[in-house]
Amino acid sequence: MAVSKALRASLKWGDEEREELAEDFLDHKVFVYVETLVELLTVHGVEATDADVDLSDEILLALKGEAEDHAASVVDTYNADLDGFLDRNADLERESLLSTYDAWSSDRAEARAEVVAITEAYTASADATAAFYAANAQEDPEFDFGGHPELGDDDPACPTCAWLVEESPHPLARMLEVGSPHIGCRQEWHALEPALPDELAVPTRPAGIVGKDALVTRAGSQEDAVAELDRLRG
Image (cartoon, rainbow, N blue to C red):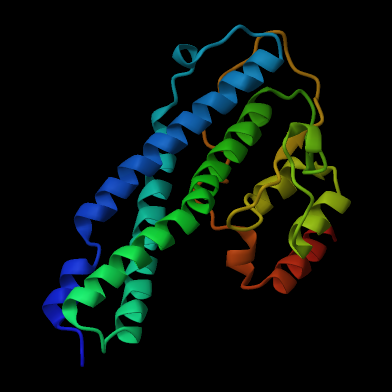
């Protein structure tokens, strides 16, 4: 039997869930952006706390826009997955269907929680890093991608990350072009410590990574992402 339209509609996420997700994502992104800048200032000899980093309206606007886009995508994906679940279980009686739905929903949330958290933090951290060195470096900065297990990098598990690790270091322009290699990436960008001035500035503009889809998403596949990296290398 078909699942009623009323039941299907009652289980779907809508504007309320999207807005709550956007607020949560924004809070997380702002926290990561600030913490990244505090860490960079501290590493370079400036005693700094969260209170010393006041993000500009331009950076906050970029983070807000990305949070809203990501929240809308999460809602759309959830609703599409829900339709698939309901269609697969249309023969169940209502009580059994709802019980099965609760288990499916909980398992799905648990399975996706870590990937979502990593994804929401990645662009904020990478953008803050790029923006910091763009604002302060006295020469063109270069960055290792991954390759530092002592700093938390995992071994590359996909062709895109393997290419980026192998071809390190990368100029800032390539880092900005790549941004996030793929959803759930566990490799980070590491600056090769360019010369910096005595007085360090907190960046006031986003670097351009926030708001950009991951490279593999933009390219369409791992194979096409590697081809794009070959093109960027020249």
